[in-house]
Length: 457
Image 1 (cartoon, rainbow, N blue to C red):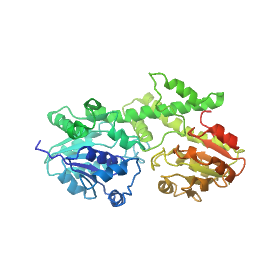
Image 2 (cartoon, rainbow, N blue to C red; image 1 turned 120 degrees about the vertical axis):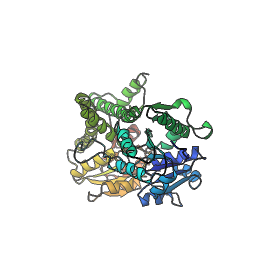
Image 3 (cartoon, rainbow, N blue to C red; image 1 turned 60 degrees about the vertical axis):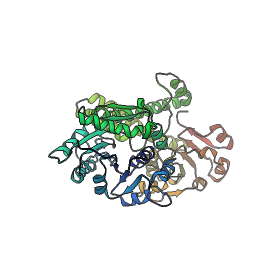
Image 4 (cartoon, one colour; image 1 turned 90 degrees about the vertical axis):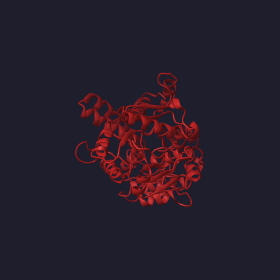
């Protein structure tokens, strides 16, 4: 390979590209970092004077303020950035394919392939191309084939999957459990991996400790991302399966999970019962794993992983069934205030949010729905644009006024501290609170006069 510069471009300015590259720029002040996207509105938001960024993550604004205009830049000029930067991260969207072969399970790779062809067309020298999007195993081989077929320059393709949790992305980036870099077993591959390792070590080796930067072959890196999310999703579905049994028998899922989690072989993480998992990764990655297993003839494994999704869907149906039963077997024309629409607290992201499924099921029952959320209302309006008559409120007190029930779907930290006596007074009686996150003081609510439902209790 010819001598390469240290400049970095990330194609894709979404949840992966924006926060990741902001922290990369912070920890590598000697490198120029450019984030590009075809979405002009998104780039405009990243460049906004008031730092009205297109995504919400705690701590993100502070990092962007520190580095934007210094060594971090946002642009729609992808061609220029690819020419100027010899390290190309690809963070484009890879949604679940909704047509043709693998519909509903496989990843739609059309945007990814178009990006690979553009990189090849616009390159003016050798490049390291880093897969940042979550992709099926052996996608790097396809990217390598596209880039290096009759190529004028040399392209080395690596896999560097992200393991960020929305709501804690900046903390996860600054202090990661591990960084995974997969590369080919060639001289060029080893050199490229070493270059990406140096990025994550940061200037002066002050970012990620060397022992936390793990290297594998490309295929292991691609599969590890799917495997990690599938294992976490499986824990969520497992504890929710136990929650239903707890409700039927009088056991308490929080007590059961606390004791299970005390076993060092299991641990306490992801044993919190709730409305099920959401977000852009878990469902998509598990479905991808199902499709991969089927593609290689591993049908029993495919069925196993598909049950994780089925259990998750069932949990949301169960929430509506319990409401139906507790509200005298009819929900028509009753008002339900949905507290929280984001798939988890500390993010405005509503992709695959359990609240979306529940709201649609409630709408089928002709419920009058009022949704409140501190960050996700704009996305909720887009997601539910096809539904009529839904009320949106940033003020939870207004959302609950005249409601028959409050359905808490997201455990925003402000909700336990609300004036629940005021909320009770404003609601129709009997007033119900269904706390699907088990984050409220149920005893205190009952003392005020509420009927309280919990998951797994």
